Length: 272
Ligand SMILES: [Zn+2]
Image (tube, rainbow, N blue to C red; front, top):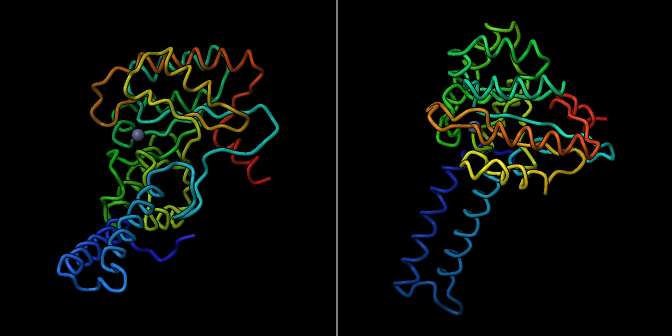
């Protein structure tokens, strides 16, 4: 585990300087004997930067701190999660599908969108779904300083609490991106960082059938499925394919005997 609270961007900056310096020494034929030490350090620096970045963007690793992405269980349980809403009419359409089948899900909402559509937030909670914090402006937290990250989280929790009377205790960083400082702040705010184990790139609208097939081919017991009812803060891209895919995914998984639970319920199994 990594617990010196250094930003990824600072480490990458430092490594870039080391790589350039080493390459210059190699070019000037310094540190070339008995082996090309300068070049070796440069290669190591590039590799380290690559690994540090991969660990910040891949959903299923704990390098910068513990995240939740799935649970190992023998029970046929899955958690559906929807990001970037609320976003009419797609959020309503997804809520309708869930209601018809009496299935709970978890919505990682953007604070700004929640402020715009408080009725959708109220409906989501009234129908038994869980809310998560997905930042106020859907920003890449790796590019924000500590204060900026705190503001994004705090403002979103306050908007949600203002609508439904309580703040979420789970959060998903936009794109899943985090580093040691992001994780430190989430721990301070007692927010569990929830990533995912099944993604279908539904946000590029590859077709409802493709989204459903990609998802269904990866689902297993304890999976956390990522889908999108929203489109960042832009709110321009249609989400009809994700809506239709949601229907296909649910019906197929129900037929296979899966039970749908919220993130909280699946987290509880992880703790047991
Ligand atoms: Zn998002």
